Image (cartoon, rainbow, N blue to C red):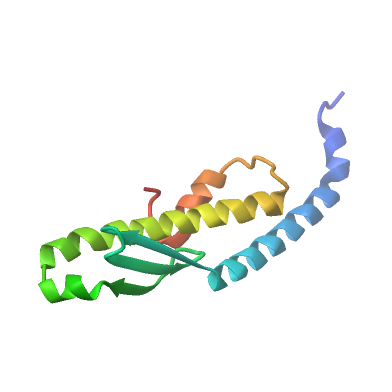
Length: 122
């Protein structure tokens, strides 16, 4: 008579699974905060170190680049290195999520990846 109501009997089990997944996601986020990725631009003239969540932690500039005092070049290379580091952080997150979910394709995962580091997906 009420098609689909048989799934309501499984609701407590689904809620428990959702809570477990939420806990695992929090644990994953904490783990990613301890991991590091390095993005670079200009054949390594500029390197940006970021956490696995995409937070920029350090910027390293080649001493020769600094000596040239080429402001325009630095302004061009810094965004590229930052974007590279954040892309690598997103890839690390995706890889870790695939492990966590056992390879399941979860709707909205791409949107969540775009939220890492508070930036739009590039």
